[in-house]
Image 1 (cartoon, rainbow, N blue to C red):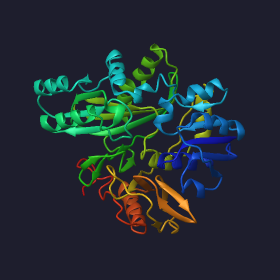
Image 2 (tube, rainbow, N blue to C red):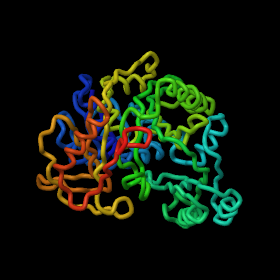
Image 3 (spheres, one colour):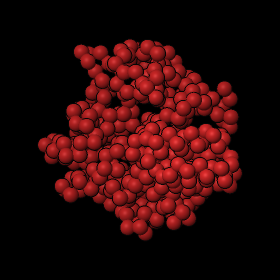
Length: 424
C-alpha cells in the first residue's frame, strides 16, 4: 500500500515514522512534510500544502495512494474527507460537519449539553458588552476561548475578571481573526488535565494509551498558552478504574451523540479532559491526534498503524485491539525564540545527526537548505524517548536535548513532573 500523510508537524513525522514500519506500507508520502520526514527510510516528501485540497487529490490520484491520513485540523474542518470521498479516495478523518466538534467551541459546547456529557459551565458571546456583564455577574476564575481554530493558542486562563475581560475584548476585536469573532467563556475547572485519544468508526473504537501534555510555555506551568511544550504517556492520574469511567461517561456518549445527530464519525477523536474531584469533564474535543501527544504514543504503539487505520476506513474496527509497550514515553518540545507570539525562523540547527539509540527526534518546524536543517516554525523539534520509568525517559530526552544547538531555543525543564507525580 502507498500511504499519504497530510501535514508538516511533529505529529505528522511521528505518524509517518510509525506507518513506514508497517509491512503493509510500500511507501509513505508526506505533504508537505519537513526536514525530518525527508530523511526517513520509506518516506518521501511532496511539496503540496496541507490545506490545498484540490492539489492533494491530484497527488493521491497521480501517486495511486491507497489511504490518506490527515494530521492537522484545518483541512478536516475545510472538508478534505468529504472531497476525497466524492472522488472515490480512501481518507481517514471525520467529515466537515463532524469536525465542527473541533472547528467551533460553541458547537462543541452545545453538543455536550445536548447529549449530557459533563463539561464546564459556559456561555457564548459575540458582543463585548454582554461578555463584560457576564463576567461581572460571575466572579472568579474563567477560561476564555476563541470559537474557531487558533492553532492551540486561542485560550486564555484568567484568574480574575480584569484578565478575562481583556482576553475577551482582544479576541472579539480580532486578535485571532475570524476565529475569535465569537468566544466561549467557561468556568475554570480545578483538577488534573489528561488526553484520551481513540480511533473510532461509528460506535466502534480502540483507545490509545492515555497521555498528558504541558500547554504553558515556561517551567512550572507559567507563561503563555502554546500548542504544547511536551507530553508523556501514560497520564499519571488515569488508572484502570478511571479509564473505564472516561470510556463510559465521555467517549461512548460522544460517539452515540454523533450518530444520533446524523454523523458517521470515522477517524481519530481526542477528548481533552479535566479530572476534577467530581469526575472527568470535557475541556475540548480535537478531531485528530494531539501534538505533541502523538510522539510518545507512537513510541509506545506496537500495533500496525496502517492496519488499524485501514480497518477503520473500511468499517472493520470492531474487535480490533491495541498492543502497547508497557514502558512510559516522554517528549519535550524545543521551540524557536519568541514562541508563541513571534517565533524566529531561519536559524541553523546543529547536532541532529548524533547517534542516540535511546531517543527519537521528531521534526516539526524544520526545512532543509543545501544539506543544512533550518528552523521554520514555532515548535521546531520534539525529542522523545521510552524508559523503564518516566524518570528514565526524562533523563534520555534531556541528555539528547543538550546535544542539539539552536540559537535562543526554548524548552521546558519540568516535562513529566507534576505535584501529583515525580517531584522536581
